[in-house]
Length: 163
Image (cartoon, rainbow, N blue to C red):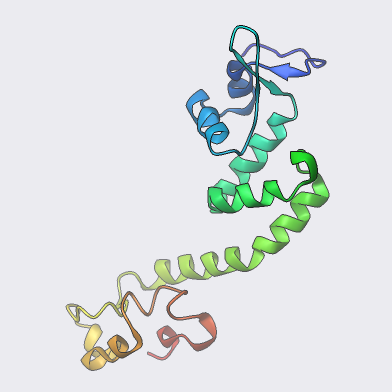
């Protein structure tokens, strides 16, 4: 890995990719989506401010925990002068995403625990389905995998615990 001088104010796309661990194509994609920005040199080469490293790390971490790019972009747009997120910014944004993350965790736990069981999709093809979903009663509540999807069957009134 080529070491970038600690006092470099700007990075080339290759330096940013190498230091952040993100492919050049992903950086170009982030830029096209308005998540990061660069300036162009007289030779039309991209130069990224060094604090783009923090923005890219923020984007990658948020993506890794399942936050959609649109939500990440909206969060970054809330920052004054499109500055890099600070520790306080991250605390505020992650707190706002906590409910969504809790829901995903619940959904993954249901998926892990009940995927081989009746999921409430209405197919009634497993021998357990007639017991867990007799006569496709969950179909009256709407479409989809009613017992697994937390958006369809929230934890507080989920039918998955009823059987």
